[in-house]
Length: 106
Image (cartoon, rainbow, N blue to C red; front, side, top):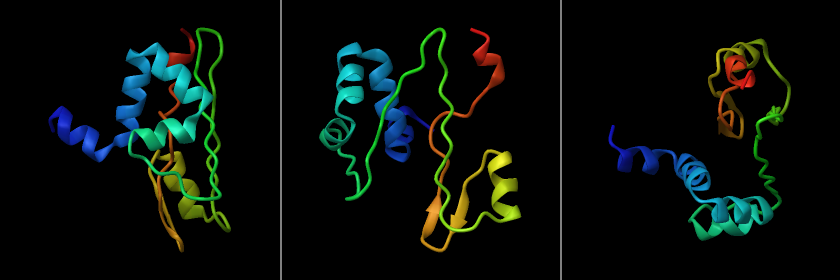
């Protein structure tokens, strides 16, 4: 898969890469996530707010995903495996980069 195909399939990956390369864009993304994402062609549904945080050398963030409805054993198994899960309202994907304990050591 080439870079163009990759960014078309993963627009949030494109945003993350841009923020890592461009400190000004990163600050804008943190200060106004919805406006910045909209300017990049990503619409945030009404009623949803987005908060962007950045890891530092000494602080790591762990995001707990919102899971609609009751949690089933199958959903938990899928989450532990790092996969997505289905729900009555559609298909959900765990967001962010998978936590890797070796990265936490610096």
